[in-house]
Image (cartoon, rainbow, N blue to C red; front, side):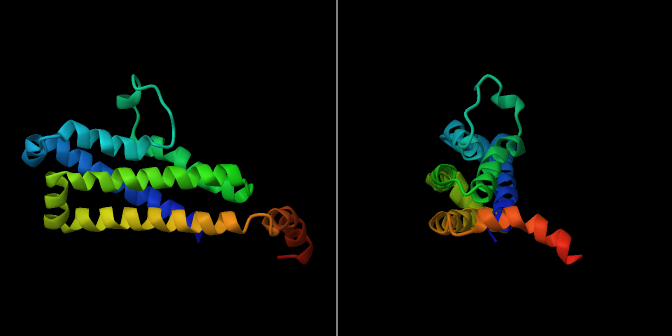
Length: 164
């Protein structure tokens, strides 16, 4: 469930931030926004909050490249049962949702959210899936050291002997 939610969150966050950045950069509403640079920065923060990069290279990077570390952090922390990595993942997910919530300060974002149904549904889905991943991350963290690591070691051994 966690891995599926992580993949869905990845897709929806990239899609919603892509739509928002496109709106800010190419439409008249985006150009009229009083703090368009700040909103663009918040959208970028949502996409890069999980990896420190040199700002000089930031324009050359695309959103999927920047979201991959967040996704990798989630997968790795569960599969290795790393409490430290999972805590970092939960913190990063919380910051990412906070950055997304910060976009509601923008009148342009709110108007777009209300008037453009596709944007609203993708944005709401991205927040919902990110919230789901955060909650499932907390549940996974509480259930670490209860046998998953041992099961993952033995799984290939048993699957070869059963004859499937």
